[in-house]
Length: 253
View (cartoon, rainbow, N blue to C red):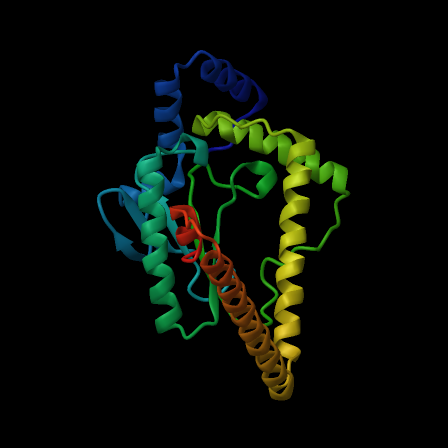
């Protein structure tokens, strides 16, 4: 693009401010290098193309086989892209990733998006990067950072609330005390189950056999006690002159 002097730049900025969204998009498209690649005005190394997407080799690759997947329609950033089209781009990325893994014999791939200037976006055209990876290549290294718990919670709440609004999800308000009680009950039950499992696992065959004998003995004693009770009841009924139906029914209990 031709370099502009200060006066030309100001004039262009004023012109852009007055543009409608449609005019602005068309203007961006005319200035976009990748739109020119898509329209074959600029040559590229294509690896895949359909009616909605184009995949090309990056001319400044992070690694060998670094591929850019571009929507054919001009979009500057991800929020502008319709869900269906975004889904198609990721479908293409999935297949390209599988192909790269197979033919380049790499250990993995990164699917990378620079969405906005602060995220490292330099092009006016949205793109999805497929970057082949090998062990120890030190590409896209990010320093680990610890964030305080209260800050994490605040960020989580903000993101969750906004996301729920976007998705049309109504958040259920849960009483904290009730939630804690339910959690405690669940934890207590889980603890009991673990203890029971531990006891069961630690039992030797001798202990199991001994417990079985004790249980059988208790069962036998219980049956004998019941039989003795019935015999006693029969004796009492026999001694009575008048036997009621209730007395007879009791014998079968």
